[in-house]
Amino acid sequence: MSIEIKGLTHIYNEGMPFASKALDNVSFEIKDRDFVGLIGHTGSGKSTLIQHLNGILKPHSGEININGFNITDPSLNLTEVRKRVGVVFQYPEYQLFEETIEKDIAFGPNNLGLDPEEVDRRVKASMEAVGLDYELFKDKSPFELSGGQKRRVAIAGVIAMKPEVLILDEPAAGLDPGGRDEIFNLIKTLHKENNMTIILSSHSMDDMARLAKTLIVMNKGKVEFIGTPKEVFKSNSSRLKEIGLDIPQVLELAIKLRENGFDIKEDIITIQEAKEEILRVMRGKKKC
Image (tube, rainbow, N blue to C red; front, side, top):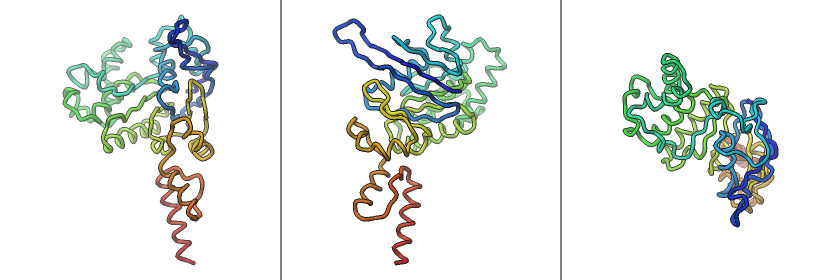
């Protein structure tokens, strides 16, 4: 599902002494089934942008079209927006409230007015999609689970709505390394198996380099860069640091190795690429 954003502007406290422009004439396009990484420091506008994509906030000017469907139309029923766009906010486990996992995941589909059989099908399918065995987990309290499992339940509740676009805002925040890997691998699998458009916001440049097909960099309410991870990180590393962002640790390593005389490629951004390139260089030295 393609997303087209045209001239999106949002002003907090408009007309007040402390008014601030969180989004400033933002325009870009996301292709159908893309996996987009959304990055930017605190105050860059990325969280405000996410809230517009789900209809939580309305712009002061501009519009958002999802497959030609204008979700910023003031007359639009928000239920129609949320059928198309699902959002998993930061620390989504704080939004779990039902006594069982099954009831929590069923909450959204029930609000769509679906018949009980369809709700049951969606709950089972979404639990399977996030790696939770239905019979084993359906009657458990969500509050008995680990942090990573709670995130899975929260994500299952969103995908049970069958959105065409899935947005995740810092989905691995606060998790240990094992939990982070679980969640990011889950998101990668959901994108591959469900053919949905995914927008992922994260502060981890290494994860963005590994997962995203397209990167959008926000700065002071504007789009600073947009392109593939290689295009964004390789050509703009100095500027990214200027606006308060890191670059992947692997790219930092490649830069330092080049500075010390190693013939390492300039566009390495993932661990696998670094491994292959270092092995190539080491084999070449052995031959000498």
